[in-house]
Length: 258
Figure 1 (tube, helix red, strand yellow):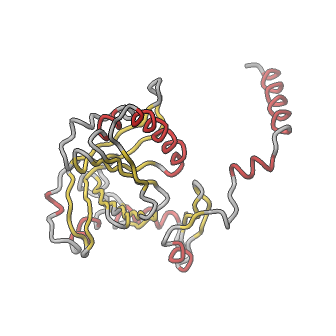
Figure 2: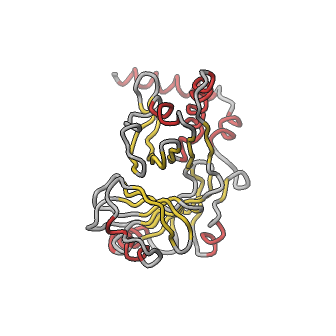
Figure 3: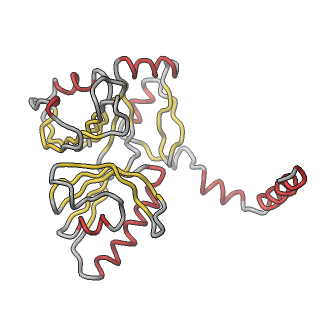
């Protein structure tokens, strides 16, 4: 497009934006401090100097007293703890929960053995990506999955719309959104491969060179014997947990406690 065309496009966009109800845009895009959701660790973040910023409707820490570079190096060399409680975990249950989920994602859920998980993508009717997700087949009638905070509303609406149609045909599937749970992340680089996904009453993602040794002190199970995609039920510091080894980046090791 030539310079004149770009100028005309800019003028058109300016006029259109001027006609928009700015208050409505503010209500839609920016939450006030009182409207932001707070994780169970909010007071801990503030007490320890966390810089709180809005993210996906939540008040989340973006930085503490140290510099971003210091935090990055510590994460790579040791491990760092992140509060990611804004993410959305949910369970699908019922004898038809697997064929239902396979209508929504690209994973071969039926092909997963009980006690295994997979990365996947929610797609629309044209095959376009809606959101990525991590799923675990707990049992043949129980699937647990996590979706991103920024896509929570559209993901849940998409699932609910298809669930209504699915159940109207007499199929057996139900869901529970785990808003009663929280999620933390301890992460960093490691020579170990993968990410350990643990799901308990609280969610915690533990990654880094020290992630496995630190967590190993809290369980009698041998975490070195957990392979990529494998799912276990075990006790972490006296709390019953789900554990799955998974991840996007091969040089990260991480543990997610739910």
